[in-house]
Length: 94
Image 1 (cartoon, rainbow, N blue to C red):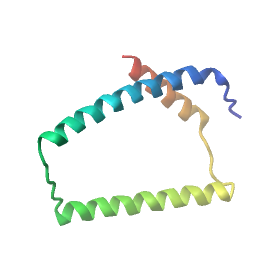
Image 2 (cartoon, rainbow, N blue to C red):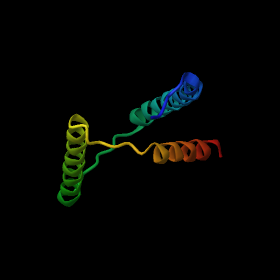
Image 3 (tube, rainbow, N blue to C red):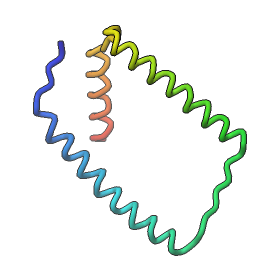
């Protein structure tokens, strides 16, 4: 059993503040770009088909995970989660 304590709140708050600052800067830059020019994007039928297929596959995977959770069959590998968390934190530091 994995116990989650409140020590992660400082890290999460710092990440959220960083993201908020970046999104504000990004929004200002997008606003400036929008006022300067108009961009039109056309997506090919093939690209749209790939996008739709990807959405369908993702949706199917989500539904299978939901069903496994509801049936009590979903298993969580705590060691895999913790190692990925550590890897992510280390990559964000450097």
